[in-house]
Each structure stands twice: as C-alpha cells, then as structure tokens.
Image 1 (cartoon, rainbow, N blue to C red):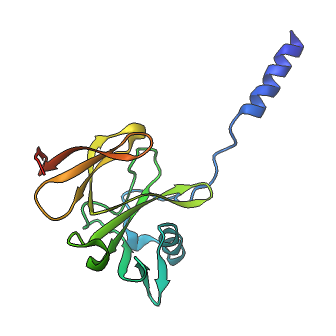
Image 2 (image 1 turned 90 degrees about the vertical axis):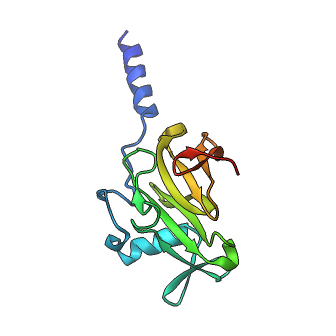
Image 3 (image 1 turned 180 degrees about the vertical axis):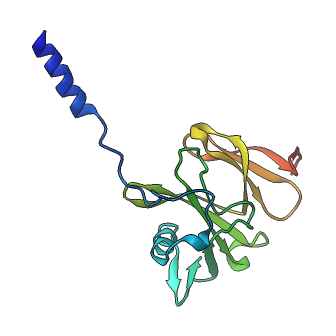
Length: 174
C-alpha cells in the first residue's frame, strides 16, 4: 500500500504543471492606458504585432501605414482583458487608406504569454468589443467600416467567424 501511495505521489508531482510563469503583463492593473507603458513595453508589443520602426514611428503595410497602440478613444479599445483570464490584451491600430481602402484602419490583438507577446488576431476595420462572448470567454467583435451594417465576429475555438450583422445593436442586412 505504501509503495502504491508513494508511486501516486511521485506521478502527481511529475504531472503537475509548473508554477505560474511570469507574463509581460504581471503587475498591470486595469483600466490601463497606453501612455502608461514604458518604451521597452511598447517596442515589444509593436514588434509582436508585426510592425517595424521607421524613425520615430511604427509602420505597417510595407511602410505605407502608421501604427500605434489604441487608446480609450478608439472604439472602446486600448488595453483590456478580452477573454476574462485576468491578463490584459493590447489592441494595436494601423491606419492608412493606401492599405485598408475606405475603412482606413486595421487592428491587431496582441496577447501576453510566458515567453513574451504573441500576435493573436488581426482584421481590417475598427473594432468594437461587445459584452457577448465566444468560446474561451473571448469578446465578440463588431468590425466597423464604411456603411451602416457591420459584421459581428465570434471566436469559435479556432477562429473568429461572422455570426450576425448589426447596426447600433440592431440586426441589419448588408
């Protein structure tokens, strides 16, 4: 009996997950504005989002667009917990009609991991994060652009897919 108990304890200690690793957002408190980030934090986020520094600006789309970390004024975006896991994601906005047509905007969601920042999702349009949720607690996203009827995307566990169209919270047709 003692041998079985010892083997069970050894097996449990081997299978136990490691202690919580440090995330780049450890110590952050929400709400948080992009202005509170250090230059090193901003650089890591922008690189993870796929942008390159050109002089004092971050550029996307082969240098044709200007990128920045969204602030609270942009469609309720900025730095926020989009999936309810207690760790904030960062929304990076990229702007330029040469790349994104009449919409003029593209957004990238960057999420923290124990090894740094990871580009998690990106889309052309202006994000409006909704209270409704998909798999894993990820917020639904109304993707704004030209017109008066916008797609609402929901995370299905593998990708964001369009689940409805709406304007000012009411169903519509494109």
